[in-house]
Amino acid sequence: MALRVRVCEVTDVIAGELRGYDVDGVTWPVMVTRLDDAIIAFPGVCPHDDVSFVDYGVLDDRAVRCRVHGYTFDLDTGRCVHMPALQLRRYKVTLVGPEVWVDLL
Ligand code: FES
Image (tube, rainbow, N blue to C red):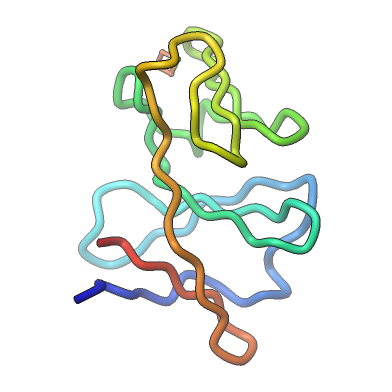
């Protein structure tokens, strides 16, 4: 069974912007952006070394780049461009009316 949580409103998600939303009971915020018509959501922590994407993540076209060591994660696949063994998890996104919900599990 999925653990589905509400993150934000659809209108909060803007192409070219990366935002983090705190969720009760979750350590790292949920990062959200829009690519084309799709809303993309992923954990707000760099898979390389547990730093916050709210503080160090930069949207770079269709990827997020971590400013700590410069690793870039393709948001279409989650794959790290610099270290293929690293994978950025992406959450399943469900729209419920005007709201964005993600499956954390
Ligand atoms: S901590 Fe993010 S690239 Fe190293």
